[in-house]
Length: 127
Image (tube, rainbow, N blue to C red; front, side, top):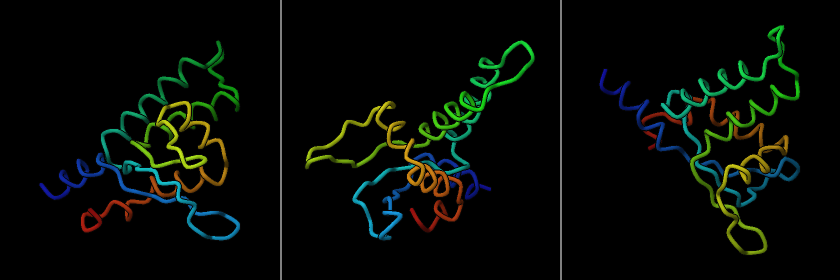
């Protein structure tokens, strides 16, 4: 039981993903540290997403697709703990706004989302 609880706690430390160019398959040099699906951070992000969607709902309980997508991206951004991203040789500040800007690129979003949701990336032997 301690191993299971320990792994969930370890997932909060995050794991590194280096984004891969979708055309060449080559590493981009953009590295993000992302928490695992069983982490407390991921759980809090999911709860925050639920709260946000409730607040966005209109009188009939509907949330527009645009609002749902924005909330989903903010949830995914909360899974990113830090990064090594540079532009013109200079580090790019790790801010919520900058993370969201990067995640708005569909192939980046797909890679981060797939990595964050795959428990194999957070197996105990990978720490």
